[in-house]
Image (cartoon, rainbow, N blue to C red):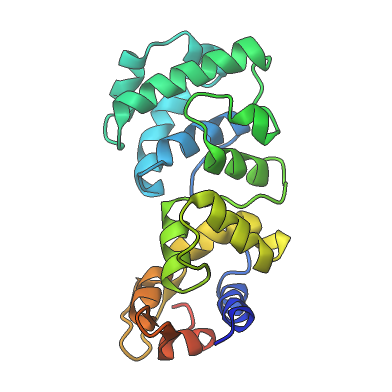
Length: 227
């Protein structure tokens, strides 16, 4: 299967199954989304959504969060991965927002990546979701799945190289949704796929790396429907 045909089939499935793919993180303003995305690193959105309501309630502004301490914030986020580091990042991030950006979440990647706890992936999420910019966020999930179903080659060894390869083949209006498309798509029974299988499971079961070819599943992807 040619690369263009593969991309066309994968995108065609998602266009049909989930034409609007939105972040599963709960938030009501840019500051809350920034906090949630920082917390979501190496952690599920479901877990983040469980812990953020009291955090957002007690620290609704950068000023409020900046006046706290990592020790206090740790108690709110202790159930996420790497809570010590994330607590430090959140307080330091809020302080920088206050001191350098007037208490507002900045809109450019260069500015966002100056914030503690914010890398390229987080910066791209904020730019795409809040500021509607054409940005693609490549996290570990997108990185892994992109390789497994052959969207990118083994030469793409970093998130940035995967991002550069994906943007060559995916329309700009789908950039912001790539991560959610991969994670959220649920496929119903089709041959050996079980209810609740994700696109990652489809990739694992369909891609034969040794033979560098795809099995039935990728060919039948457009026939799969959501329950």
